[in-house]
Image (cartoon, rainbow, N blue to C red; front, side):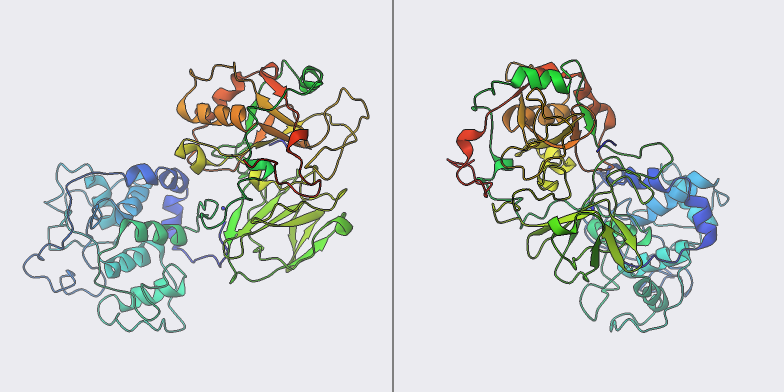
Length: 508
């Protein structure tokens, strides 16, 4: 291999709005976390409305309620400012000077832009009330006007939406942007929280939620091979030979990051995965090559699940899903949605609470017959300061053998000078990682403590991870300075309790 999507229908959008935001949508969304980090004055209560407005602050107009600026604790710079920023980046503000209470504000261009677009008329004739919070009803109106949502054909069933924002909320529900605050309520007059705002925008813009591995499911038991430290294991007698074969002079390469590769391809960098649940519809799985070594479907993997390398990829095309309710992992290799089914060369299902291995000789979605997910570097664990598992990597040539706990080989040489599939390596303890940036150092420390697992054929020392817009590519690319000669193979023979189990003798 050398290189979390959500199911559901696409939401309709206003063509005029989309033309304006298309070129800036991704940059705005990727910087959303920073934008929402605003730490202005706290405001937890709705201020009294200006004279002449009704209780929804709309000046009596059914078309345009006031645009309030959200705050931390109410919101401040929430959904409306993000949409406003999109409009401002795309067009010059044509309503400059409309409001007298946004002068000298850093958000004045954005405020005037959305006024010019008809998304707001303010809270009074010449006022915008930039310090007031946004209600959920007002948020529905802002999104409806900005996106041009289609009229609802089926009633939402909400019992608390009568009034100014009724139609906006109905359209929002029909578009799948809201499910309400309770089965039959929208909570129209409640302030929008920062969390709710993020969910509204993800659904409205059809973004792929970034879902970490569910905390309710450990990725295999603590005493599993993947989760056990290698820093006390003996060096394997063939270590120097294998390191030389892989490439002592080659360097580490993070095969994951933010953005896309190649540029303009739309292909994320890394191996993506999604989180599903027991309610996710099952999809038929058709195997095209190794069905006799694969686990049968149907599986809860939506047909719009992300594919490694993108929908047009010619590489491994892995598809991975975790059922958070049953703690079951599903992985496909060379996967493609065809009609109403997934077609894949091979696939494997794992109980994340078990140490059981696949049958000896069976492949999986990976050449070594192992799971892929437990070897991926994810942003969340790096940001937490520690990776507690081994990391998957590739080598250009592997032997026609595999070693525990691998179950399968895809080698091209029988020479003992070539490493077998499943071989464990580690970054030597004497390699100084102190000069690396924090995130790069976390990755390298994991390689010293937990090591690398040879799981597939590919480029030398390519390590696997999940794509994430939060990665700083410059930082993680610092590990490219680490040469193959800084690694050593380790002997895990003392760990084996049962050849059909990944449980490690003595625990983690």
